Length: 289
Image (tube, rainbow, N blue to C red; front, side, top):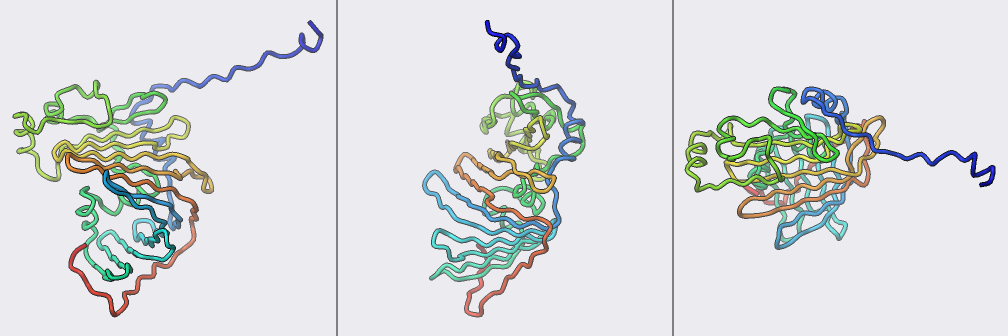
């Protein structure tokens, strides 16, 4: 053995640090400290939207003022703006520039929820676009925590009636999609006693352990037999904050399956933006979208 090889230090073995068990309160606190925040935000996005039968891809420019306005300009493959949208917490303005189909619509924000089949409010849309958790309440008593592979998982605690409908203990829950039998008498009785606002929704949030950033959310609406899954990846640094550059939104029900993907190709924060929205005189007004 040569002197050189004798003096060489053994190669250091890099081991992945085991994920420690954490309480729901601890995870909620750390998530709140690390979620993305902004006053003004501008994004360039490459996106696609499709069903099992067809899909379309497009580019979009998005401008946002926190809790105030979201402005979107959609450009398909030809590079000419075809749709412009202006959203506030209460209103929706929609302008179609598609040849042979030029019109405008002004109405309430909840029209978006009707179109996609999911009850959305302004804050939820805002959180979706920047990668923040939708509906993640700070009340630690409403969640329990566990470790799922190498991520933390926060699960909304079942109410007693939800446990009856699901038919399994919430601590034995497996899989992203939870299905119930709508013909089960237990489900019918529980659904009949459940109002629209209360719902039968199970919410789950996966947080990666290094920065406590959201990587996936799954919402199971048992009453309406619908599932929404949102996943994020490719986190990029903006100042001292991280945002996910890629998002996948999957919405499924017994009738349809819809998927949207988008990638943020450019992001700029802290700069005030204008939200131009002029309606040409020759555009026809519609009462619905």
